[in-house]
Image (cartoon, rainbow, N blue to C red; front, side, top):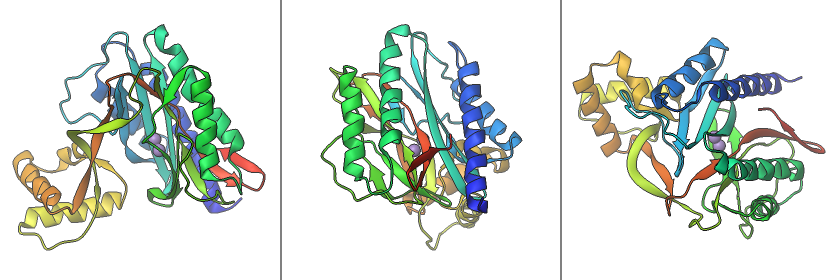
Length: 297
Ligand code: MN
Ligand code: MN
């Protein structure tokens, strides 16, 4: 076994255990911050590092939400909760998500994303067009009486790069190349209700960022903060919450604002389903092998 393969498998094992833990701790009234922090600290206890902050998406909140420091939100009654975790071992990333439901009315919506993920991983092999994977996902979700979220996609993963190169659409009709042996993909169907708009839109909320570019900065605090971000996270996404414990709040806020303004770091906006309908997600990271793909999460 190559070193890269064993590190992918280790990252995948850790990520899978985080999903089990998420299922154990998500319950009505639990603070979202507690879920994020518990899973992130468990990542380190198990020998990995977070590849991105734990994303927790309640109902129509579809992606890119992580608790800010002091987040007062708790898990609401009758909700559906997506927990999306990323683990890396020496830069080899596993990205996986589970949807937990506190309302059995949503069971069908949750299983539609899971079924689509299963079908997509069965179809994913060298030589298949990425457009074909989109068609497989769309078919599975429509068959269950639901609607795929059309503007979110799976993605290729490379060492220390979470989203790179080819994308895997969740609907038919989107061309984007051919799957090749040796590639790593995160496959992630999102499913919503039939009557929903079926796409996500940006909000103004931003809790997750990543390094973008170098620039001469006016303040020394900002330059030091950018250095620290580069060293600790490279191009991987990080939570603004993670910067808290090591910098005094006021100067940190100012430095942080300067980095955003100069586009040295860029935000991931929280994405919500455009018609406010609940969204389910299922995600695995897979390695494309000779005759198919290996699910590592
Ligand atoms: Mn993910
Ligand atoms: Mn992903």
